[in-house]
Length: 171
Image (cartoon, rainbow, N blue to C red; front, top):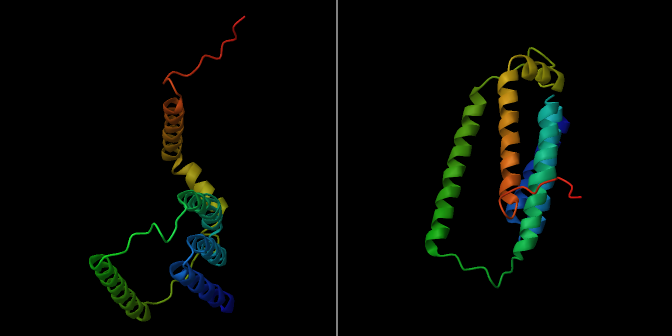
């Protein structure tokens, strides 16, 4: 249990550093570390598939995209517009609403009983694969066909003249 609390402390610390960091690149790097601590939480909770997906998708793809976009935007303090009174007021109201929601959630947490897992292999990749390829085979295959058609459509839209070039060799 002490490992869980230590990782939870690191998650909260790095998420606060994401919010309060002045440099946007540092903020994204702190967000990568925060997602890594979430991956460790998933491993502790015996959800290996979620850990792998979190690691590959969020840390490997989305946050790298964030870094590239921030570096391409070339954010400077000189070009940043000043925020008006209404924007600051909306931020205070939103933050206060979040605080009230968190306090209400913490009060409800004290009344609930802990959840005990009946099956220790509940979040394993093997069980997920069995369910995915037995019960949900048709939706899985339909989604793969939809993704394939979207990829073909994106390739066709990306060509300059709208027609794919012929691959016939001219002799």
